[in-house]
Length: 202
Figure 1 (cartoon, rainbow, N blue to C red):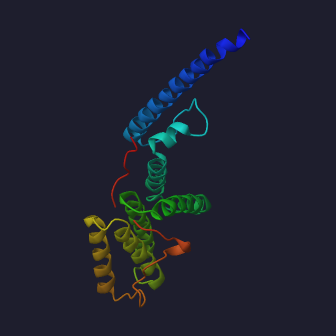
Figure 2 (figure 1 turned 90 degrees about the vertical axis):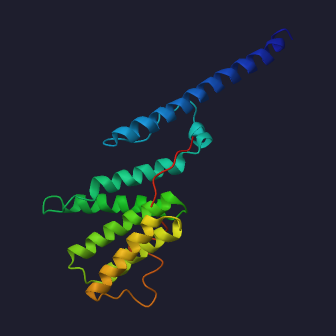
Figure 3 (figure 1 turned 120 degrees about the vertical axis):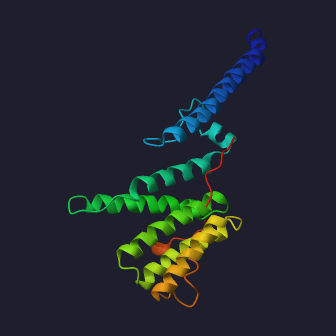
């Protein structure tokens, strides 16, 4: 019976420790976002956690921000890489990872999704340009991505400008993208919407 009297105190002590660890995880996320955003190269946006189940990440609501940052970092690392005989498979695999990460973000709404779709459009447009600029399927893929960017954030004037610029360029080359203008899915089943910059969850 005497031991039972200490249970409330022990419970309060355990709660205090848990709250202290959670507060430390919150600060860790804040530091990680700030430092990794600043250095970019080699950034992982992966904060060390003392409390399991990503509790601090969920509390701060940074999950979508982190996914967007990682997808954009993959794009930045791969957009300028050119395939050669000795690296063709590795370049293709890295490109596929970047596209998949961007497509996952682009399925949402708002500035993050708009930016992800815009970056997908840039990749598709690069393929179009490198192929001579007249492939209707590549033109349709690029158009779809830029249209998705506008749909994701209709206040994004940059996305609207990018789409208009692409359509004018295609028109100048006499390239048609189909009766629906290529709206909907991009290449490899990409769908989404999508300019803007990642937000902050805290």
